[in-house]
Amino acid sequence: QVQLVESGGGLVQPGGSLRLSCAASGFTLDYYAIGWFRQAPGKERERVSCISSSDDYTYYADSVKGRFTISRDNAKNTVYLEMNSLKPVDTAVYYCARSAVFCGIADREYDYWGQGTQVTVSL
Image (cartoon, rainbow, N blue to C red):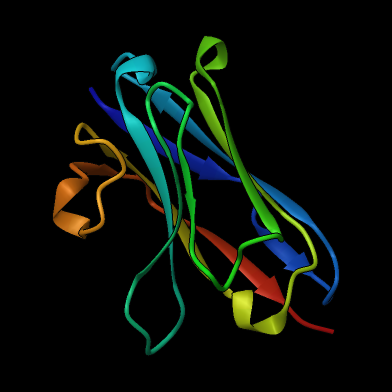
């Protein structure tokens, strides 16, 4: 069955870095865009980044532009989110999700979601 599994979260100090991974199984990753989202306590889910199926388009929210980098390795069925210069406001549960419609803007354009990985940025 289709599965997306995030990993790589944890506790990091402000200014630090983490690399999240989204491991895909049960489908051919090449044909899908993958988005990264995050949700902080008491806040709505936010689209952070997305990479197209053909790897020729990427999206970043203004809040992470210049600090986060999304990439994909279809041979390893994995999408990555490299996060640098982390700030306390980046604290959230991070999710990856699959979209068959380019890099969709709305949550409903993503049909499968991972279970999430916690990122905490704190001293």
